[in-house]
Image 1 (cartoon, rainbow, N blue to C red):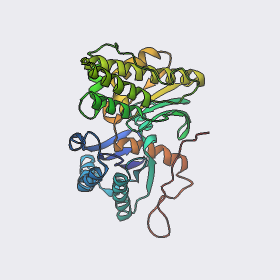
Image 2 (cartoon, helix red, strand yellow):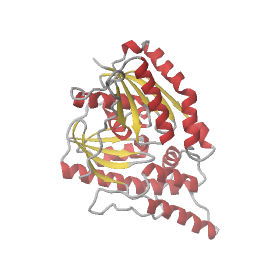
Image 3 (cartoon, one colour):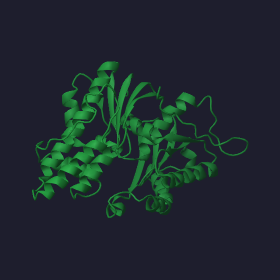
Image 4 (cartoon, helix red, strand yellow):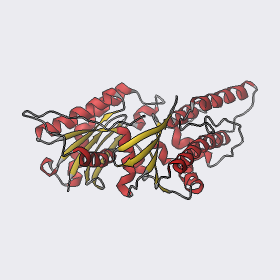
Length: 339
């Protein structure tokens, strides 16, 4: 049995969790800063890092208290080491390192994106080979998983990530931040009536591109306003979301069939999109699809604890993750093999 205290602070969520054997989430605390950043229409890095500093110790204490545990009950400390906002990451890394040093515990750095993938493994059994569709505000990737921590990148976004496109389209339409949940909700009330492109959908590649789609929405809205025409917000949201989902699902299905995977994993903040959840099960019925519950889709420490467990199993016997004395802090990472 391995109990991992995990820390996540890559963006604007301050989170600490205690996870047992990669699946059993004993405690899970997430402090969101959405209300603070909404007024700016997006995350302000300096404000995010300052708020991590203010609340990090309290979140640590609450996670341990909810688990009814102390440092002596922890076997390993895990912390997000990137990618993310550098200031926010440093707050989490410093806090985790200090906790590990004071309590003479081993510490491990975890790739944030791999954490998102393993969020799906908290509530589901992961089966290999698998295909992971990782979609968030900063990332859009298709990844082939031959086994635990054996990951190859098949395709990525050439420009904007899908979540970023949602936020920018929402801002263009005068909708609130974050844009993804708002557009998803309004899309249910609208109809796909506006003609929008499906970028790279039929290309012989697993890469994505959403910059052109975002620009198409901005130009269409601008042109209609210049002509004195009203924009039907619900229909525009439905049209935009339909274009996005056509691309995501088409490429996922193509990759899953080509590689003959046993399972499709959908992860990341955009995996919470209800329209995506409805369509992907309906349109890819011949593959098992697993998606984390809503609380594990967005940034959280539980997913970091889950990923750390499998990372430790793979290399724990070979690496020393001890702090103090003659040992060193090892933030070794599994990076995506792009070849």
